[in-house]
Length: 459
Image 1: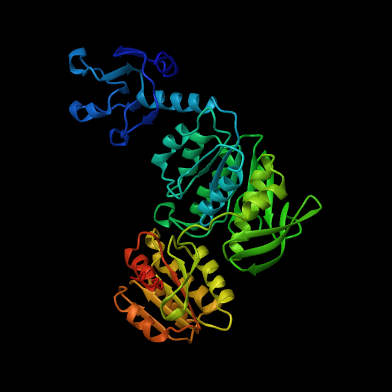
Image 2 (image 1 turned 180 degrees about the horizontal axis):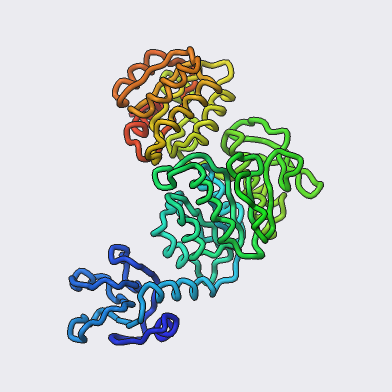
């Protein structure tokens, strides 16, 4: 407690100094556990609701009468609550001298982060973002998740709007930054594609000056970022000869991808679980990151083989009528849609290929244009049957047809009639891709219904 008062340039006005702080918050609704330090300028009115959370440490620039402060609240008075909060954050981060990875990108963030965590966890204690829970309000709790025993940390820095990556950087101060790729997403807040690219490019400014930036050298929008202003070590991954970590001889293999990794004039055989060339790029970035932390490539490659593919991310199941089903209902952007359609075509070679596609969200006024771009992808890559669910998703279908897509097309406002249709047109020589995001309950429910149920246990 004495330390907290010193760190925040405040002084104790109520309660005991001998209180262990385990959690932090800057909004009242974020206080979920006892031993939390709450930094706020807002006046607390209902103290009784906070009783179950005692002891609570209130760091505030508001003046309270001593008689107003309950016994279970410890109070530190500061000149400015927001400044005190950031003093606390910066002090906490300064206590740890470990590799910290920050990952941004339109697609592949969670997979790349989980790959890095999986490789490192073989012999290191790692703190990481939970799945794709990467909202700006979660940063403090993830930072406080770093403890004395932590040897590395891996965090996603998502972009909902400009400034999000910069804000995450204020917490994590990463030593390694990764940009997986940049498509078109969250345009409702970033306004334009250029604004979105710029928001992702904030990654260059948050990495430690002697840190490392890892980029996908072949991603068109990432190329638009001026990396010359980055003063640290730049690592490029991809298929081109100029890449520092280069993949060649990429091919599908059982439940994943095989390729040869070239680095520093040496070659390594790599097997990564999960289908699609995009998975190769995720693996390249993950291997580059852990190699930067001192993990030898053969060790990383061996550990990567036991990586478990994430749920609802191009997961393969047996579907209705003994078809094959690709469940890709975790998220949807044009970037991930293109990857999914390519996987559908590879795995569906010689089969009837059906794509069931939902609406792309978080686009704001760009909704029409981005759905038209999705239609272009569908027309270019091709499927044997196209089914869309939702009003905006219909734009994809209409635009694909306008561009010359001639296969059967079905458009539905909701998913009610999709299952009966598939029941009629699907057989054992069919592969279905169902593509949507976690917020579409209709698409998720349909994906569950399309999976072949195991037979009931015998009596």
